[in-house]
Amino acid sequence: MRALFVSAPLPGHLDWGGYLRTAAAWQAAGHTALWASGVTVAPLVAAADVPFAALAETGWRWPPPPPLPAPASTERAAWQAERAVRALDQWLDERRVAAAVDELTALAARFQPDLIVSEMFVAASGIVAERLGAPFVVAGWPAVAAPVSAAQEPLAHEARARLERLLARWQLTGLNWAPAGPPALRSALLHLTYWCPTWYQGMSLLPQTQHAGGQAAPPLPPLPDLPDPADLPWVLITLGTSFDDDPAFFVAAATAADQLGCLPLLVGRRIAQQASQLDLPPAAVVLPHVDFRRVLPYAAAAIHHGGAGTTHALALHGIPQIVTPHAADQIHQARGVERSGVGLHLPPRTVTPDRLAGALATLLPDLSEQRPNAQRLQSEMAGLGGAAQAAALLEMAVTR
View 1: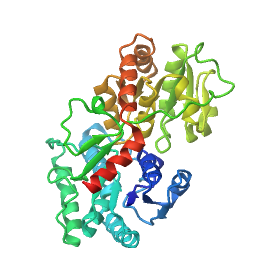
View 2: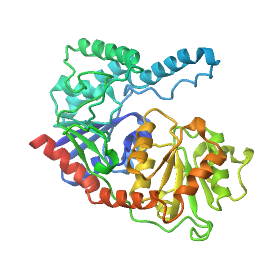
View 3: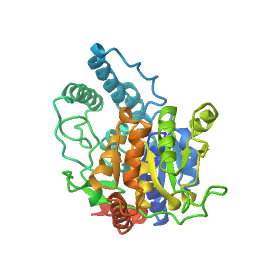
View 4: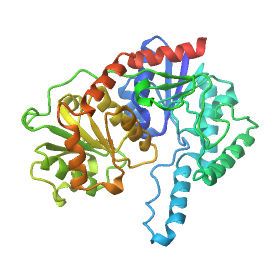
């Protein structure tokens, strides 16, 4: 069978805990895969041995516009509203999505997929699947029956109007979209997550949601020239690859880890460039990037942004974590950390060295509440099968 996998052109959008690995497992099972995205992620897809097709337009806006300056308190409501519209423009700008639909339709017509698989933020994929009558699956995100709050209603109305205009352009019904509320891709066949039931406990998931979990990669020897983690516990501090331009966060987190006698291990391209100009503890280690296989098996805790891939990798290693979300979708990982009891959620505006030190102190002891929870979550996810099971679930979705 032939599956077309679609993503926005950012490394994190290839991941979601196992999305690209699912495409590789699909091929390993004897099927044909093709990954469609922006050319910037082509090397990452090639490294996974998955064939790649470059799209000039995916519908996802990147880089985003400059941040809006914080306003006076009297203007905060208008500022919040403009920020919300900007977030919507990131993935549901009508001109961008329409161009992506045309390009992806042409690609799919050539490839003739038996299945189209998409992450949650490529609106064009759901439209193209309906245009072609192809089975459609959402990867990395559950199907949730969620009400619209009063605060969401104006933006939800604007977003729904945009979607309706896009659907009308091709005389479609919105088969692959949630029928009400804020527009969200919705597969009737399968929503494939790389988590487990405990991660979503208390949420109302629809029955097409299935979990593949995940398994940690075999460890490699620890990073050289660093203290023994048994003597100086390692605390991973990162904002991922797309939101790492927040030096105040890194300074606060490194100071907190240092105060508790830990090794602050800061990871990020931009923080590595800025490190010499920042007031970091002398013990802090700053690296532009790391192989998680040489860090996570030896880390005691993590302070990070809540990127799906980072959060998932930490969960696979049973590591307690503090999440300070730096983008809209990252709040979902922060809430998962709280729901499953494996760590804490601190909004960025509340982050100070003392606040982080207090939070970190509750995670570090072996008898902390979060550490056994993290280990139980790790075991539950490993038992679900990971990418191989995800590929099997895709096959069943098409053939049943």
